[in-house]
Image 1 (cartoon, rainbow, N blue to C red):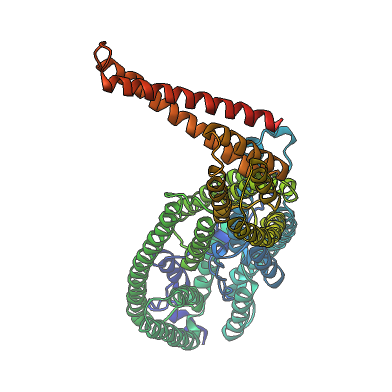
Image 2 (spheres, rainbow, N blue to C red; image 1 turned 180 degrees about the vertical axis):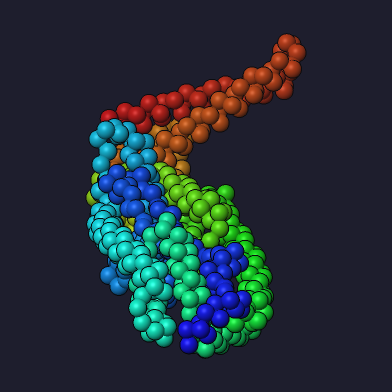
Length: 636
């Protein structure tokens, strides 16, 4: 048996380092995708304590245990701050800290953007209103909640890396001890078969030991494979066992290739890319295969790997196109938001419509979802800036609107005060005119909030209604009074028609009795005119001088009007005197102008007639002047 061993030591087919070669091929051919451990640390300018770096312990890339499934990062752009905090807290409670590093940092970064924007907006408003930056304080409970969550998370992450570093160093010590045992195994006592069994146990221990520090991984792996190669050279006499192991390795690698090729048929997907990584990781741990199959099998794996990389490139290009379309869609939404303030609404209803449109655009923006692109942050900032501009413009409108509303409020209160002061006024005509004007002015006072505006309108309307209801009642009473007066005056007029007037005293007495009945207004005044006309006809029959008759009747008429306090009648008499005076003076002036057209010779009949008319008009002017003086004296 030993002689066969010595003869087989010269066999070239056995002299190979399968594990080492596979390791080199994997390193050169496999594209390793970034994991959560390689994600960059997120910075936070808000909290110097949180800026303390948590050092990530780097481990070797290949390990026997499968890696945990990568967690998807939620779309924090579509979440409110409260929802984002709940999502972060939920992940912290459910998963190990190193698995959620990208999720926590991404969510924290987005929340800080929101909080910083809110704080900056408040600070800007505070400074615009004249505040001092030293006195500015702005409490954000959500920031404190985020700090508590993030602080606890970082403590757990530090503890994880501390524990991981200890484990990696312990694993390194174990693997170094295993290398030493493999190194001394060929010279140990016992049969080749026993040594091989011992070697399998060491290899099993090696595979179960776990990760070592990344800086030591390549050296440790190369040393292990070197001594494994030496051990297999020593075990040429156990070639049958090695051959069986090679065959098992071959079958397992064929199965890996077949599984990867089957997965390729499903098309590009994150699951396919994870399968590729898992395949290469497992490939390195399987061990050598028969030399005659080694290159063919490796070429098969390389071909499948190349196909996956091709699909991944196409997938990434398609993803870039999708991201570009999302960025364009978000940019279009930003333009629509900016367009809302291109033509500013001038009324409250217009701003309500614009605000509703803004909410719809915000929902549209969030529905597009998170975009993994360098342009996402710039679009996000433009989106926030457009909203800030809209809100600032809207706030400025409502500041001015409040000023206008206060002015409108004061105008309405002034009109209410006016209506209250006039509602019981005895000056019916004047108060009525002022209240009608106040009602017209009310329509132009401007807008005030509906709740307060309704109260003011009720107060104003109540005062106006009080006056006009009183006026309506007085008019009804006046109409009833007029009806009685006109009935009595018509009866007096009928009696005058039957009565004979023998003296001027009887005429004056009849006029005074008629005026004492009451005052008529409007169309009912015709009864007064008919009575005056009839009385004048009866008095004319007495043969009195016209001027004396006119003066006597005028005096009696005015006295009766004064006695009845008929201001309207007195106004008519004053107007009559003024009109008659103006008419007489105008005709006199015209006659005096016409004299210039006559020759100076006496005896001209036309001239004599004109002079006679001039004298008559002068007399008439004197009579009217006398009547005016009489009228004024009777009013005293």
